[in-house]
Length: 327
Image (cartoon, rainbow, N blue to C red):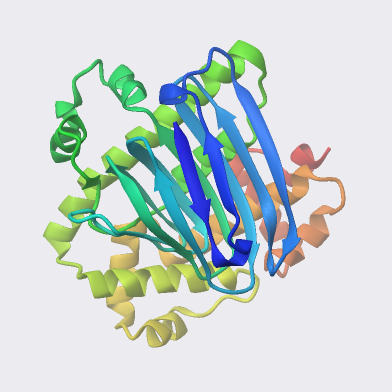
């Protein structure tokens, strides 16, 4: 299997990547490539090959719009979690839908043929999982009918998107993604662990799609309102230390504050304050896992004025005190 990419930023250079058929591999293999700074682009790409799937972690810094010409010579089945950034694929083939993935959202999609253009307007942090159809069939015991229209499309080699728009990356998804990134095992245990986590993420996507579709039907949340909710979510994430008030968020999004509170809870599964708290504590846990910050510093860095309030919230969220994790 072969992937061909080119870009004006690469000065007419063409990069060809090859993979074993159906991503087949008896062992888990990992390849990490560092991208030295070149024309405003730098970063790291880490690829882990399982038996029938490939996990790709990207950390890419971009200071301008990056456009890539892309072609695959194999059917493309992909789970993509755009943790930070924005991705848009536009096909040159007739009947193939565009795949847009805003920051903080994810998609599951299938394209039997891939030839088109990828656009990245900003720096990105992603987890991408390329699946073979064999891998999908293994999970569902060769019965893709459970996936409804999506499964029918895959069986018929027709393009398909699991959802009309990118769905929000939920906290439980972020937890699973971090467990994949920080896999503690090697050898056969690593293979079993990662395959199970990939399957778990896939189940979360399918379950959320069903709930998301029902939610849109029941609440009649328009795509424009969804975009406003994602904008509010991004504002919360970018202003964690000095957060906006609910009234300010509503004004910035152009929404009624009661509508904002109700719709945010329906779509993201958290109240506005609950989402902020979860972000802060997850960030604190990550910072405390290192050795360069003490508890008081971390408490201040995530926006708590009093460390005792932080300690109480941390204990309630994770069941341990910050000092237990630190030491």
